[in-house]
Length: 104
Image (cartoon, rainbow, N blue to C red; front, side, top):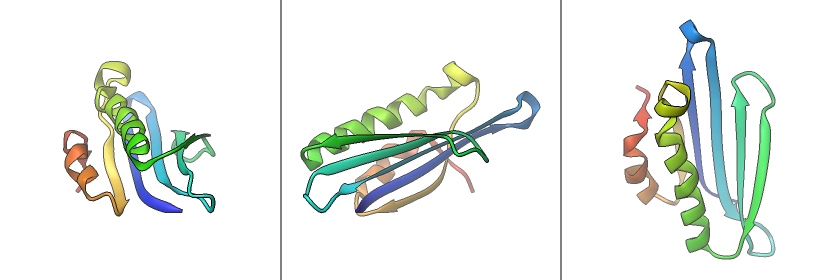
């Protein structure tokens, strides 16, 4: 199923912030596009949200919208998300996530 996957984390031990956010996108057996998001506190099971979309372009726009919200995390939670892992065939998303900090 996986065409694209990204895992982000926001950690601030001083303020007890431990957040995780993952997005996986790809096609199912019926060639529908599925975006699965899992988010929550690091170490917990978290919340999973799955969205069914009908083409790759719509899927890319949805993933971009989700990642855009993570870019302004500093305003919302006071700390940036860092990219922990990014894999898949959508290599152009590597450029689009440049505003998210890559953890070294």
